[in-house]
Image 1 (tube, rainbow, N blue to C red):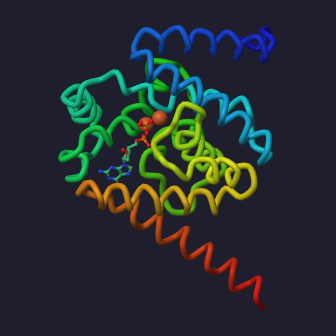
Image 2 (cartoon, protein in one colour; image 1 turned 135 degrees about the horizontal axis):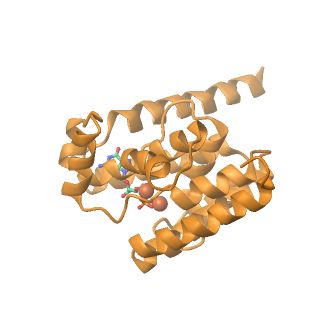
Length: 208
Ligand code: DGI
Ligand code: FE
Ligand code: FE
């Protein structure tokens, strides 16, 4: 493998991944996937992250979306992945956890940072690393998204201040979950509190 130019190797991988994803995802989901991949690469350019990793994590972030709820629950049981009560109530939340394992098992991407970015892309978590933050944000803002009227502002923020953008996304997502009476994962709430505190600390520092 070391005789192969690394650039060619990853280019080969990317087209293999895209062909495989096209077979398992519905058309809309596949288009969203490509949108997240190039948005993540653009955010990586802006925020000095690894573009290659951001693109691949973007491609794979929803790779488990083709599975039914019972397939996802079975996959977790077969692989001894713990399932939280909120995930039993809403098994769609499991696509991020399952996807991070499929990235390794099915798509042969053996990279901890990419696996973590996929694992946390739905709820996020307190203190996300750079790649995790980029995938969390790219998933929300890619050009195909239309669900949030504040998207034009959030898209601009994303290329300026990632933590501020993450807080904005949490505020809007939690409001949407409350409005629709959806159960909120504790990881989501803890992360929201973390980013709200970060923002307040930043403001305090500016006034001193
Ligand atoms: O897979 P996508 O649709 O591209 O995006 P995603 O993985 O971010 O999932 C989005 C959905 O997840 C959106 O409808 C909000 C929901 N979500 C995020 N955090 C929570 C949540 N749903 C529940 N019930 N609880 C959460 O904490
Ligand atoms: Fe997702
Ligand atoms: Fe997504």
